[in-house]
Image 1 (tube, rainbow, N blue to C red):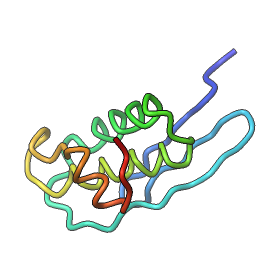
Image 2: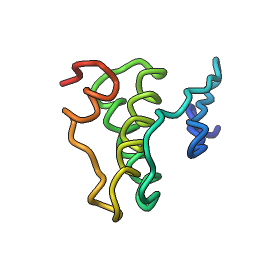
Image 3: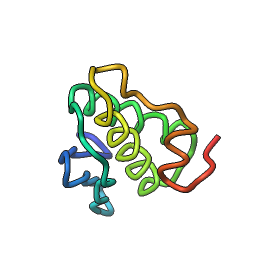
Length: 96
């Protein structure tokens, strides 16, 4: 019993993910931090979005890190919540 996947948010250090079969660390994106309010919520939203889009777990964590990184670049808890286009641009990908 227990969770199959655990993600640990580590702020400027990125995040780590643990499953029954693997564990890995994904470094944070380097951005200019303005306000960290809401970054954790954005990370969780990004993680869930990545899972629902069918990304592999490492890409899920990278996607979540990108969402959280962009969230801290603006003042306020919701003002920094990025669009999918902004996340794609930061990651250099095209996730639909």
